[in-house]
Image 1 (cartoon, rainbow, N blue to C red):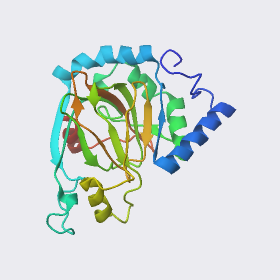
Image 2: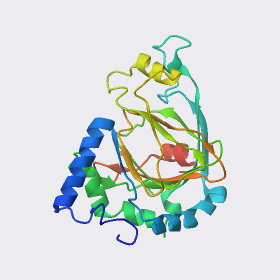
Image 3: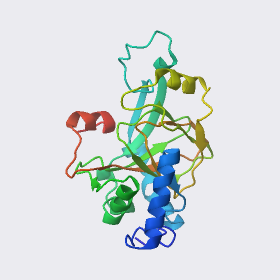
Image 4: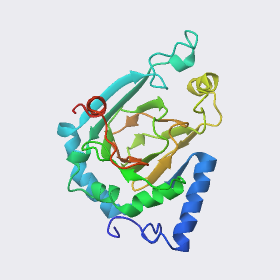
Amino acid sequence: MRDILDLDRYPLDQPDSPAWQALVEWAQAELAREGMFDLEGFMLPGAVQGLIDSVASRFAGEAFTQSRRHNIYFNPNLTDVPPGHPVLTQLETVNHTLCADQLTGSTLPELYHWPQFAHFLSATMRLSTLHPMADPLAGVNAMAYFASDGLGWHFDRSEFTTTLLLSAPEFGGDFEYRTALRTDTDPNYDGVGELLRGNDPAMRSITLRPGTLNVFRGKHTAHRVTPVGGNTPRIIAVFSYFDRPGVTFTPEERLGFYGRS
């Protein structure tokens, strides 16, 4: 892994070392405070460029394009809010996905299945263990956002989301988020409505650099990617782990996420 990751700065290969423990403790503190942490320069520049060279040209002819309108909860049946409430606002998401079986031969599956990567992530999340998915299409994906594409405000289904930025656009494509905006028992419609109106002072925006690993609590943190501008796409790798082995999507879920089952 030393040929693709900066293991001097981020010693994921030395889980018994004081440096590894210090990194984990810092990440845990960031997750508690901000709901996310970033490891800038996690992937070495040459490895990032190699991935861009291997996948960027394939999006045009091989990727599944998903374009949908949705509210922030991805729930079309919000019946307990009055008509006209901001949480009913229709948002737009457009992205293009290469699935796990289309990334064979690249370094992304190698990183995804590296045990020390999952071990580090589980430690930062205070989980006993994390396992790669057994799904032939999910697990690790590459996603691209071209000019005018973006990711509308939403909450994730999973507790944590792990991404690696490979390519940054010329402008736009900023990651905006609002930490701890809802709970498992309280959707916080009024608070979410203020965010959608642009009236939430706790909303934050970051611009990531290629090679940055980003981990965030997406289940309770509202987040979006602003529309991309320019000729350079925003490309990310998305890594999905579970606390049990053998997890797969249903054929219906694969069809919805990837256009094939």
